[in-house]
Image (cartoon, rainbow, N blue to C red):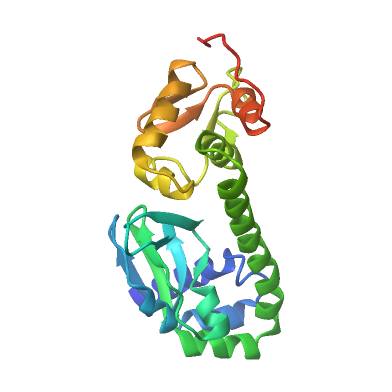
Length: 246
C-alpha cells in the first residue's frame, strides 16, 4: 500500500513537471517506477560528478545550481530551481561532466534515476523531445538575463531586477499595493548575493537602504515589496523617489 502511494505521488510530480508534461498516464506510470526518492536537508550540497550518473526531478523544495571560483571561493547562482524542475539537463544531453554544485535552499525531496535510463527515454518518447526545447529555452533566457545584468548593471540594479522578476501580489483583493516574492522568499542575503554575483555585505547595505526608504519590508523573514515603481525606476536608471513611504 505504501509503495503504491509513493508511485502515485511520483506520477503526480512528473505530470506537473514541464519536462514531462503531455505524456500519457500509462507511460508516466512506467517512467515513475524507475525513480527512487532522496531527501536532502537544507544546506546540503552535492559534487557535480553526481550529475553525470543520475538525472533528478525536484519533488518539493528549492535548489540553487551554483558555480564557484576555486581560488577565491566566490560563487554565483546560475539557476534557482523549484518543484517540477530537473537537473542536470546539460549532462543528460551531452554526456559530459557539468562543473556546478546544487545546494538545497530548503529541505528538498528529489526523484532520481540513472542518467542512461533518462537518456534512453528521450529516444523512446517523442513527447519528451518536444518538452526539452522550450524548457531549455527558458533556462537559456535566465542565463542570458544573468549575463546581461552582470555585464551592464551595478549591484543595486541587479538586486532590483531580481526582486521584480519574482514579484507577485501579496493579496489579490487587498487595498494595500504590496507584493511578495515567489521562489526567492525566505532566502538568506548570502544566497541573494550569489544570485546577483555580489557578496552578502553589499546586498545587506542595499536592502537596508530600501527598507529605510519604505520601498521594501520584512515580515517573518520574507521580503515584502511596498513600492514596485521605485524598484522599476531603479532598473530603468531613473532616480528613486525621495519621500519615505509609510
